[in-house]
Length: 483
Image (tube, rainbow, N blue to C red; front, side):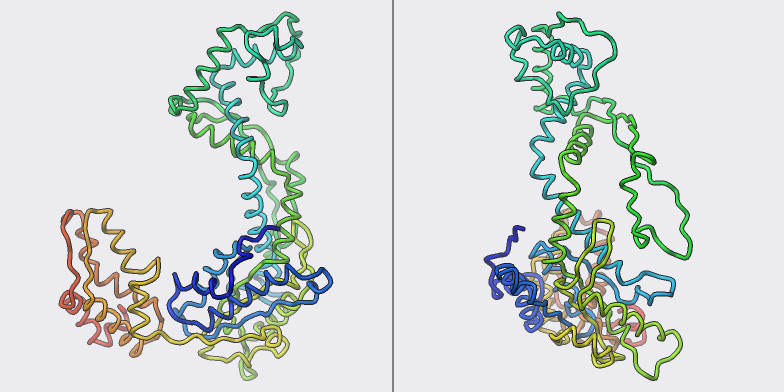
């Protein structure tokens, strides 16, 4: 299994995360070390590799400080199968809802999609060649039939006007032989072969992209099966792929432009060329060795002894999660998956509870705990300007598409950061998400009138920010509803 980040050190991983996330150095270091340990583990002997367990992490901090963003950027960085799930959507076995094993099935589906896309890219050139021949057959059906008859007659290449090997379809693309008798003397005329090559050149130049052709696509239909007691097909682990010949797989003819038909044919050819059994094997291996599951809102299933009623199922969810985190075998539609070496990163604000409210056994399976700090005025200022996806950069580019140039002065950015800090301290602290609300209110009039002020340059000054936001910030009752 090829891992692209073999040479990345923990410092480099943190540097990559710094491009998108401001502050939270402890959390970044923790996930960087966890990711690096996964790479180190791959270099161990098979005996030692099985003994090294992942060091699962709990990130503790208020909402909007970067817990989810760290996990999301980490997954993109390492290219590992990754899913983000909410702990609150799972229920104890016996209750209506999703069972915790479905997170493993979802992770395997992500892994299958990743591996399939990689293998499809490796056969894209062959698929494009086959799709090109199929398109030429659709554009010149008569010439395609003549070539097929010439190939079926067994004539040597020297007897043809041009070498048959240069233009013959691959054996996999040959249409079924017609039941009528072939003429033993069938040949491809020079004119027919020349016409096909002229069409091939036009096709490659894109001159035929707007021409409409009729293509045959495989239409897959799943059977309509009614399932009771809230159980889904995935949870029943019913693999309907083996029944496709009974319930689907029929050919459907549809009209499309040559440009669209090429995409359809390439996709179908790539599907034919990729071995799905091999895809499933590689995907399960990648999930088992490099999979990452981010469990958000884990504090919502932390149950205190004095809680009753609806909370009765929360400890049950913890009991169900425990064997998954410890390491167990989960049956999926692609095969059995061992969860022993999947990395789990949990996160929660823990406002109403604390990590010690979790089951002791579950706490022990998350040995690393990092606390994320609340964001300060200086953090807000950096979030607005420094990351690659900085909010100010986003708004500048969005309005530039309308021909409006935004110019944020330093004093305006300072005031926006100060207002975000002040509102978070007086109302609910929602972290960096407060900036989204403030920026929308600040630029509401500019966005609304963008077509009328096209070509103008709008300077966002301290006075502009005060005019738009100061009244709302001072009126605390109003800011509770708006900000």
